[in-house]
Image (cartoon, rainbow, N blue to C red; front, side):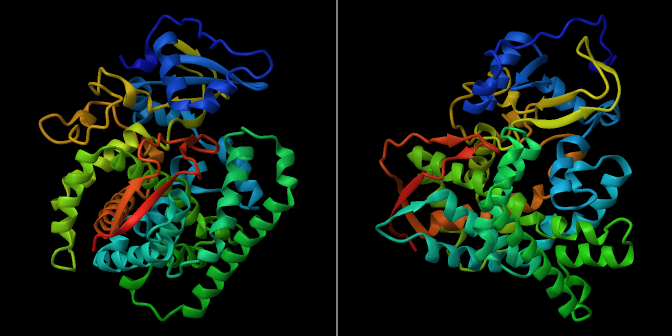
Length: 453
């Protein structure tokens, strides 16, 4: 009998909150800790009030595993949470907001472009792009604003690799558009009148301008590329021309600019936290320096060389555990169902707290410790069922997971190979922001002491 069938039905508790605003403060301060504390006190199912709305939360390994079951797929859908974004773009649908066959159609179109296959044979090109970003944004003797520098690096990388162009002049416009849309229309943490702000309207217009440029560039180069040279943009545009029902013209700007949206709010946040965590732990920094010095000793690298930097991979995985971007996934109940003895009604809005196990000592001994060896055999703590969900769970698991893993490993290996960095001040404690998604504050800076290589 699965957890969704457990009987008898019990009353779902409402988390204690403040009048009018409910649990807004707890969610805003540290959503990962908030969901963990609620799970400890109330169990795997509870309700939270956010301003005027009440949401059901299912959390823990129970919820993480449920997302991957057939019943989970049948009982949960994504559409409502993403409909505001779709409407704001004048589109009909987006990959993150579709389920079932419609989701599979879009995923099939974009799978190759978002996979690590898109970067196969181009690792040294990625290194060159990273070097270019380092030399542009990390000045010796000056404090480097880490998150901002990472956003430019990621845009440069994803633009060059996935789309064939690096629109650095649009980074701030993309960032502003993401912030407003996610805060107002997706996570609903801010009121809708903010979409009238001229700053947002100008940024959104610039993102549309970028999308139209990408479309024009595709047509200018159409018919000149070999199949193996095609990228994500070619796959999306080819699908539009061959099957406009699946990829209509109205959806092109949203789909084409998607890689930048994804990178700025996931990869950039994660590798910024990586920089902090590694610099905070000198013993980890020493191990990484030893590995990356050996990795780049002969210049060019090949795919198999990435196996030679286990400390980098371990530090990335530990960063994603302690500083998860996907704290919770948002869903709507497709129909009535029972989860862990609680009745959930069709149409209810839910948060799925998949990151809760990241901070539980039952799965990760001394969970607050930055321990990059958790993932090596025989420990393999992340392999426990439902215990590790940095890329989400279920049908909507991040499509770019394999690409992101390569991108982050090469970027961080190269950054720590080239630069001698330190926290500024040395005892700095990372300040974070939570809206629209968790990540380091834009104020986080490090001192660039010099070049190591």
